[in-house]
Length: 307
Figure 1: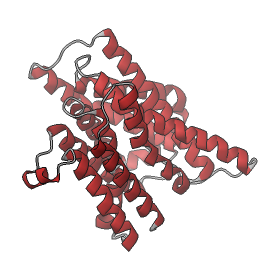
Figure 2 (figure 1 turned 120 degrees about the vertical axis):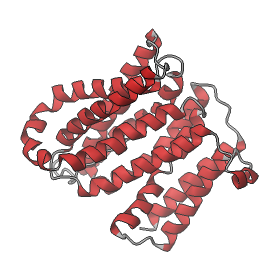
Figure 3 (figure 1 turned 90 degrees about the horizontal axis):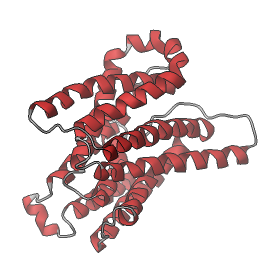
Figure 4 (figure 1 turned 180 degrees about the horizontal axis):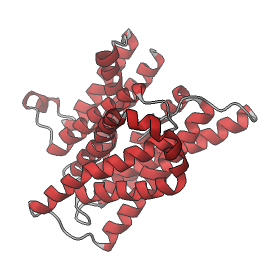
């Protein structure tokens, strides 16, 4: 998921820059949409906590190769805010992925993708709680629609289940994961004035370190097993695409057209997840999936236009 910088690039033909930025942003969100599929494919091939640890270990190695100059330049600033940066990494990188990959064991990729679309709503609510950012009428309507979509997919279209909160565990874990990522995104407003690449590299390192106790706990309770060849292939895919390339492409896309315009592309993630779940995993799409996706995307659209 995204990590933004601050100022758009100015030189060059605006049309060419915008086209390149759009292509990069679509590719980034496609990678994040595929993450739900990788999570489902990982079931039985690699333990979820080990997947989190190896994902961030791989991403850290790649970032050290490509961004070490940024880290050296930014380190004096980062060192002074290390505790705050660590809290962001724990929420947005380690915590989100621990819940995300665990959820994949008990809920369809379609549900994961659609529920993931609720992150902008958690950001909106978190901004109100943390900074008292006013929620306008249209934004409030958008929040209600998005929450309705999440409840609809969680109840499998049977709203009577809501009385007993009869969601499955995976749906609850994904809702918690989205809340964590929302808190992480809200926290980015107070990020130190460093390059995005330098900050991301440090956060990837922290995420890897914090993930190790989860892998150790997985081993101690007897849930550890050695990954299959497919499991290692999934590690490579998750490391290269959602963790590394998506971040790089998103960062450059934001630099080209600015964070506000780039942020709209995040709404493509649940769409890509849903399409991949149907055509790659062969999951059956039900009417309640379509209804929930429409509510989530409609709610996000109304919230964006209500700013």
